[in-house]
Image 1: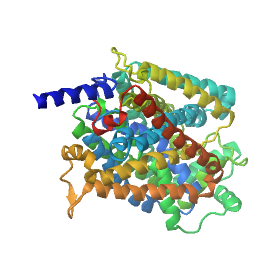
Image 2: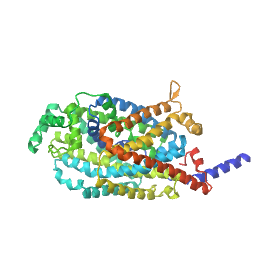
Image 3: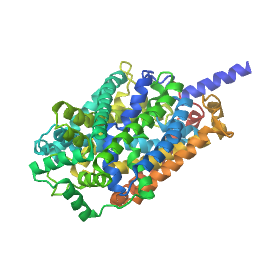
Image 4: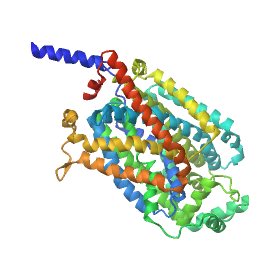
Length: 543
């Protein structure tokens, strides 16, 4: 009788701690959806472009083979593993909040999630919805042989605002329609984006340097732009091209590479909506990195083979600076160069241009998913108002949170179009490096040794994974901390990020302090209601 009394008391207490007896979310994602969800947030064509335009520009002297080998090793065996291990052990929706709040401390988990789900996801809409207008539309126009003047108005503040607002609105509609609808669109858009990158890589692989130079020079003559040899000389005169590779630039280039290999972590936001989660989450976290680093390496190395090492630096400089003497009617992105090789064929040009736009667009509905799942998880633990946990029973979506994010996203878009900064994407990433990836790496490193989560670790499918007696979870956490350290160092090492760092470091600090105040404020408020929220962090929230 005494035992039954304590069991009944515990059940009553836990039901009071968690806001719902069941999450209301439905496991709809199969393995393919899970892998593609990771690839989707790694950006497909966009992240390949960001690496190719960012690595030689920010880190001149990069040796790409070193970058891919070190980045791939740490990305797969470190970063991918920690998210796979933690996600399989704690298959709930909510992102890193679920792991860090249970393993380290609820205040840290909340502050990290406040920065990531609450702030960064809105910041991605701020940056990435306008990217559909610029660079998206100029890339598309150039890929199909249109003059950049055709889309010039849409890259100016008013036109950009219209494009970004329409993008934001359709992103909202996709998610409100439910995850099944999103996964269908994801399959089509990511499939086409990956195809566009693969076709470009094939073209670079089979095209000789001399053929590329002949095609470039022919177009240069038509449009009054410098020949290839003249272009190399002009850029060398303006910035001084590197004469040899160096290890610091090669390691620093892992920062732009990381856009394509570390963002599959977002599978953690839908952990409670993945079928067979202990298997599919782990496989999804590893496989999305393997696909993306293979595709990025193939594309970038084959492009370097075609244009030369100096040429890689030259094209990155032109793409970022757009000097007045460059008058070809397209930005020299890898997608536009691929279209140039096939004579701006309309069908292939559309594939190349849309592969960028489709990949970029999917980041918008994803931001809604991540924002809403993060805040939903807070609500389940009562670290937020009760309406955070309101789920529409028809589409299984937190509609109120989605509408809230739309409003916040529009505020961000308004800010961006008045002062567009493409490299701000790196600054947003560094917010995640400090706030999310570093602490989650620490969580995985100490996971096997923390007594309060021992019952979760013992149920983990990876508890027996060891090397010389050390749990692989700890090894993966350590490798990830090395990767995160390299990425943070790279951000402050390159002079190209100095001005943005001066702006963003105070923002990082403000957001983090706000997250801590949010946790302790709600903890105090719930205590006045007679609810001890710390009890929630001893268990996983209900499915």
